Length: 81
Image 1: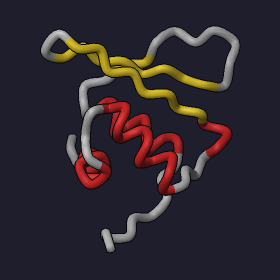
Image 2: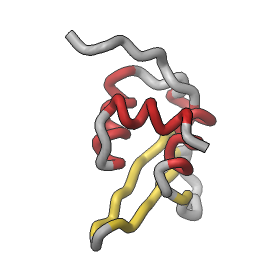
Image 3: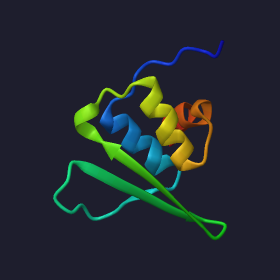
Image 4: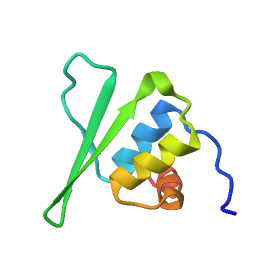
């Protein structure tokens, strides 16, 4: 069984995405934020729904997959500056 991670808050997820090179797209009247990154000819898009914060392990795993990284690497990105 994998290691157990704590839930993440919305500001933590946003910091992770910034550390991974993502930038926020302009919002259009919805609670969902879109974070995007172009890398090696690919577009990565992560949807962040802050009202669902703190995020469950399933949502964190899904956001990590959208970002193109493992869940462990997603958590590790919180520590980068």
